[in-house]
Image (tube, rainbow, N blue to C red; front, top):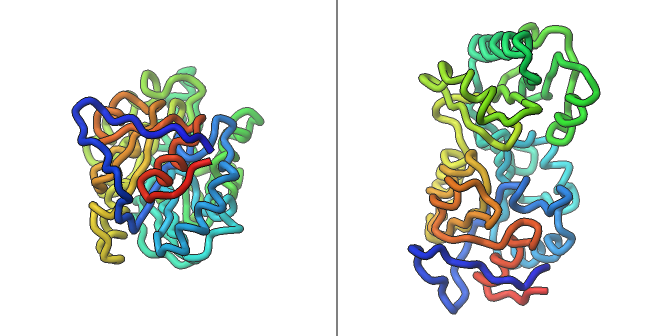
Amino acid sequence: MSSTTPTCLPTSPELPGEPVDIRLVVTDMDGTLLDGAGRIPEDLWPLLAELRRRGVLFSPASGRQYATLARQFADAGDGMVFVAENGTYVVRDGVELGSDPLDAAVAARVIGRTRLLAAEGVDVGAVLCGKESAYVERADEAFVTEVKRYYALLRIVDDLTAVEDEFLKVALYDFGPVERTTAPALAPFAKSHQVVVSGEHWVDIMNATANKGAALRRLQRELGITPAQTLVFGDYLNDLEMLDAAEWSFAMANAHPDVLRRARYVAPPNTEYGVLSTISRLMGLPTR
């Protein structure tokens, strides 16, 4: 674990010298908690044990599928809250705490738009994200390999519009820069739904009421935890609302510029294990 300490933004308050009363730690995964190779740092496991000993709840909050997150934290997941699918699905110990399902007719329209983009030459495919599984109709190896990184439960089907499940969102993977290609083409959906860029190649379409921040605020209310007791880390645009829900909001040093502007503080980049070192510093734990 890096011993590098967080760097405050020029206009942000200084970090206190004494340990902070933190009850809830929420972190994005890709570009935030995961290292440069996309792995969970080994030093996280003893840190999770210490957080649990202190009564601090740790919650991964990701655009990833619940099944994927549960698999990643299988050895330390008891009592952990998973904010999955960009806040549309919240689960603790296998029990759903809340969800914000997407209307099937809206999902079908997004799928239709994706097919048109592909016909026009955009290298893009849709992932229909349901509670039981994720589904794709694009079956080439390059696309499926990328999708499987985030969706442990994945089914290839002939027609996405014929799938029966309770849907959470539609995620589109664009092999090009999604902010310049696919995302602008989805602008009509933004009038009534969330169209959020969640990575360099990913854009998600969800209900207008669905985001990581809404899920976090609901969780805070249910647990009786305040924003002042909440520590949040993020790096991309799908983390913005989540940062607003915590007084201890950190953008990773490698974050999107909009995230750096929105957060109160900056943590070292994920390649330097910034989440771990920042938690340790704020809670008065030794760094490695």
